[in-house]
Length: 155
Image (cartoon, rainbow, N blue to C red):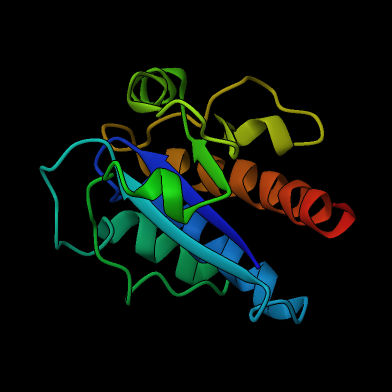
């Protein structure tokens, strides 16, 4: 079994969107028993809260349900629980790299490294923007999720 963790700052926009989309793709591929998916944030501001209503609405329009998800903060033990820890941006990746224990054999990197042709290297934070930002995040996450699923299938 592979375990994938998506990480952003507060775990209410980008990482739960990636969590919901990738989990949907995993389920549709018939791999739900083989790939575990979760998400979290590096910050604790929103622990226990559902995803941002705008992220939930944008995902719902494309057939993804984020409503069961609740924010949690990254924990050091996540390094033992997950094979792939994927940050949405370089700032969160840097935070995770500082916590990375010696001997961690998993993949720690940027989520968009799995995008076939990323327009840029990071998933932009749509929190302070308009509705279009959430749609743009969905576009990026859908493509990167497909790339990640292919990478997991081929390993």
